[in-house]
Image 1: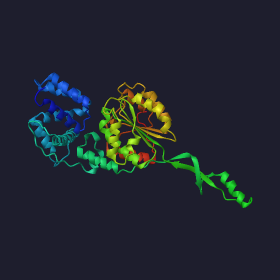
Image 2: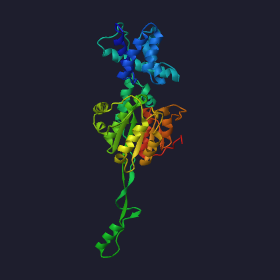
Image 3: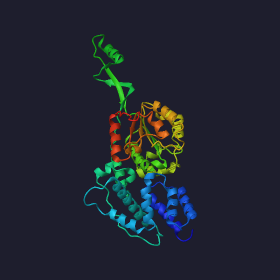
Image 4: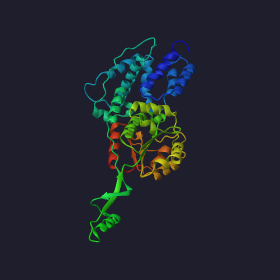
Length: 394
């Protein structure tokens, strides 16, 4: 490939990555090979060659389509995108148009930020004003993390940093002194009666101590979960700062313990440390093997004293759900409460038909969505009162 095609192709991949798509170096090399294979004789061949190596999910198609036609100079789509960037004066858009508008705003911001960082831009530059403002708080609360613009993502992170996340305490086996209670402490009552010489003595009472239970988080960081896991890591970091007995793990093709890294008070330093420790980000998913690894090497260390387990995954296992059922069953039995957090629940009528998802839902005490700030707030409320939500798929 001669000229500036390789350079512009890498710039195109960076634009997609800035717009929120999880594209790694391996996919970038595949895109270069695909472009070299099909050439530039036909625009459709070039389009679908890049699409085949860069897009892994159906809901990423719209973003790729707009990015391709805008980046590789389709004037009609450029005019359409600029119209979308103008403020909406009256009426509400239907859901499909709202999705297109959100994708276009995020793409325009990505193009603007990418062009600013490039010393060698394309031969023809398109100047555009991408100075957007994020939605108000009410709209932002219900917006899908994957559909947020760059500014909206930053605002969502700020909201998460200001969250207070109380966890309902549970009763332990130990007792503590209580002035008035229902359980008589006979040992202390008899000891106190010796001081009165056998006369009537005041009864002493005791009650069970309450303490925050251990919280264990297992978060899927595979390609299908990348947009959500990055936001949830900010939420887990806030948990680490406020609570003591919180243990965090991430998994894709392998399990990684990140509790120590998330203990940094500065969220940026914490996430940088996590990035250096995790080597399987945005790759495949081996849910069964990773949960089995946790059960064998970590369960006895962190699942004592009525631990609460949060499993964050969409249940899409690369191995077709093998070992997921057995590993999930053991995990659920070791925990006081097992909650499955699945962003796919944002779709109305979702059913866990994938083998991995069907195996997980069988043993989950609760099933919740974590696709927006509102869903995170509902999770916080559930943790604070230790509520029990019925599993609708059982």
